[in-house]
Image 1 (tube, rainbow, N blue to C red):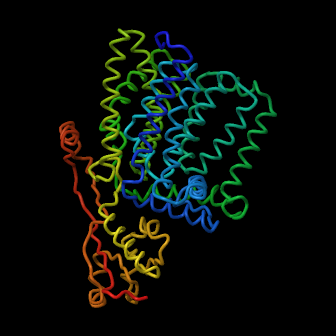
Image 2: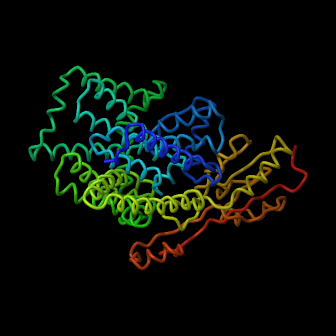
Image 3: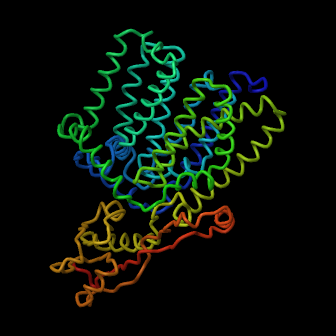
Length: 507
């Protein structure tokens, strides 16, 4: 129901939403300081682009982001802007995917989903963040789109597309194992309940499915073995990756509580949450397979990611995807039953407010630790980078040493990639500073005090964080956070020191 909007008008609407999404994702893309994880992805992508060296390491997630970012560097150069270009483009492509299921989901619902994906604070933030999460969201929704089209009108190319997308999704992030488990459990439950889930699969006979399996196997092997140059990557992908991330469940890295994603829904995605709630009611009342599948996806993903010990803000995109799709269903149903013009006017106002929150959070406050979307953001390093760049221009043989004793290798390795830089543990008893420039953490500074007489130093804040105490979350606490960003829990920071050898620097 698009009130007389023809195919041309609908296409123009999707085009306008895509341009909005692209503009929001590219605007000032390189201005926010690189966070630790971003520095890792950018640095190892640069190593791949400059040396061709890469092998899959589960702790750094799948290889696909590194391949795509390295190709971007080769084509456009290695800069802060191009390091974030892959997620920005993935986040823009994500916005267009609902158009491919507008006949199955409903035209108003699909267009609503596209707009919500474009202006979502979480999707905007992580589409401007040099990690794999926006890419994984794109691939996840692409898989869902192909699966929906397959069940609606099976085509011979669908299995091959599913195989390629599934391999790419595994190569983006190991969270794909969770998505596959949720989908498998949903199909099994539907079969037990008597839904004819196998009929569309049998409609294609065996050959397309054989091609699909072969496509998956070849793509999976090529991606994880770096084109067969690292054969051990296949074993790592099948065995070490799942084992490593299963072990992280017991570690509870990040220290977030189980309510992280629900709190983020209420704090940022309140429009999607309200409309998604309406969509859930519609799904339960109408009991249509697609809507029930979306509801299962939402409930299962929210439960699994909330239970899993590895809780970080960027994982919110996975349960947020089905919530957005249900939100489209919800708005479409409300507009059909109530006064459509009034409903759409109110929705437009709410969307404008949501977009304003997204812009403020992602573009203006992206490195503010009081934002739930920010994960230990990097702080005041721009003056340090400018000082070191000036010194490097004056002395091309400048040497830099960065203390890694406080997990401080990144983002410095990315920013100092063109310098003669080393990354020692300065708290080690045998370490003696020899660089022209030192980046030193507080404890190492105390230990090295007798060695720093030849250096001139000043203090700066390299990281800030907020340790969320979810036991203190209440409606009143959320209101105070919304209005003044008053935090619940302690805030901290890591102070570091920049030391520069007193002139003259060594030639």
